[in-house]
Amino acid sequence: MACEIWLEFECWEASAERDFFNMHIKLPDGTSYALNVWTFAYAARALEDVRDEMGPPYYSKGPDLLVEVAERESLQKIAERLVAEGQLLPVWRVTNEPIEP
Image 1 (cartoon, helix red, strand yellow):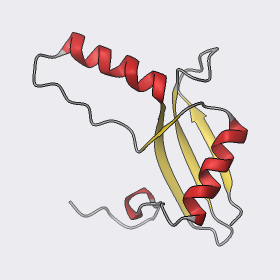
Image 2 (cartoon, one colour):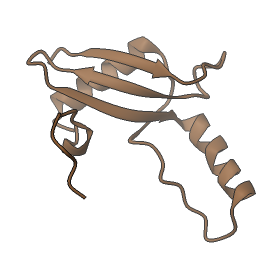
Image 3 (cartoon, rainbow, N blue to C red):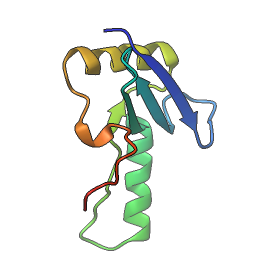
Image 4 (tube, rainbow, N blue to C red):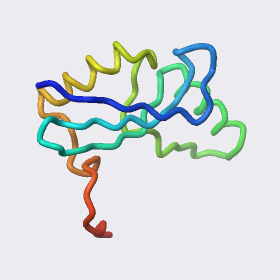
């Protein structure tokens, strides 16, 4: 299934392997999903920061999705695969309804 993606970077680095960003996936019927995405390399760096900033036991709330690289072509394919395989989680869906606790 075709879908459109929109990418929002907080602070773009020269390396597409070491970044995090928000990804908006819009389906042809208008349904939208929003995900926080980290690259594998960014996740490793973020976990190093966790170890430096907190004592054990360590944890991270992490992202919604981990990807190898933050390149548009790759991310488009990933979004299409998520849609085709029915892997878009309900919690990622963008609605105007209040979120239940």
